[in-house]
Length: 87
Image (cartoon, rainbow, N blue to C red):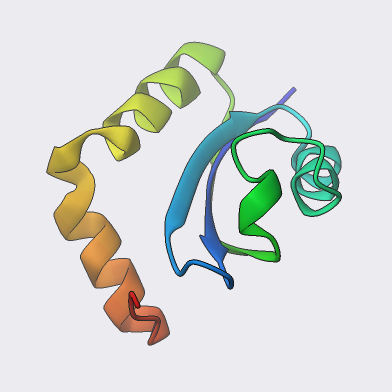
């Protein structure tokens, strides 16, 4: 089994969302169908970053790492690389 840590970009509010799942396709479908409370009002969403792990614990730690303010530099560089700006 694989575990995924992902970053979504909201085309509506231009913000990022960090999440973790073991079924990326199902999870993205739930996000874009409005079945995830945290992103329901922020649709449509676009997958902009994906990391794959074999270990659930490592995926959990990476998700937490990306949610901390210290990940700001990584997220800023990701935005610049993809040419997406905040409003």
